[in-house]
Image (cartoon, rainbow, N blue to C red):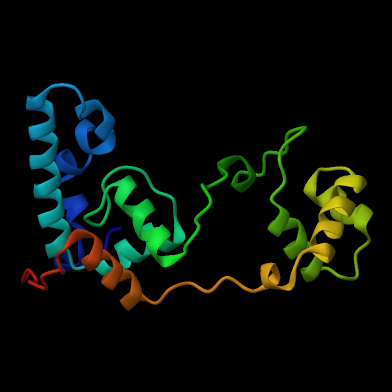
Length: 187
């Protein structure tokens, strides 16, 4: 994420060699010998320190925990730690479906139930046949999803509420036993 002033540049942009190191990108590779584990731990500590100083830390952490399923070391956390934060906060983040974002329609793909229901609610005037064509599936598939939504208990129909920034920061501090230091670099 680039911004106009150097004070607003993300720490990961300032030091890409650190944040893109194979031991941070794929921590499972560090398992095995003690030397690689120590190196991975040192890299994580350096990256966590850089993230703590980053002017974009809070928004980066929030997005990585609440909005996007990202890989590697992000916002002072590993993938495992972000999973623990999501469990603590009751957040569920679906992996990005890059095929659907690119408009790829393929046969026999799995439909997201919430997406079918959302599309129906957004277009109540359209027939189920039109909805099936939009989704690239059969009419019976759309009907099955609509029956499931109709028969679901009321508590499943509640809207998902995202946690506040403060709840995410508090969960981060509780999980990692530290709070973010707010030292800002002067340009």
